[in-house]
Length: 40
Image (cartoon, rainbow, N blue to C red; front, side, top):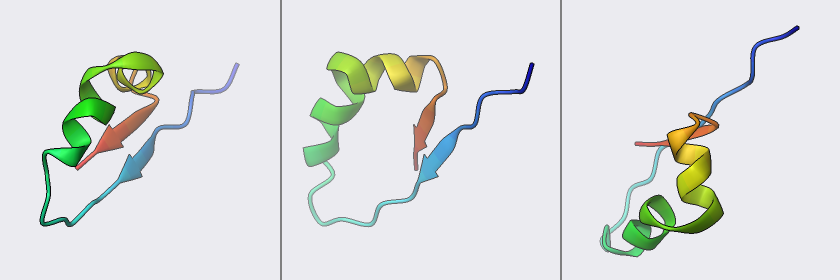
């Protein structure tokens, strides 16, 4: 069985508060917890 692939996103923004909802709630939060993706 193969290892799952983690996607990494690097974001530069003037409004970092925009990403709180993405990183703290919903399906995207579960993916972050399961290390399916990473936000830098």
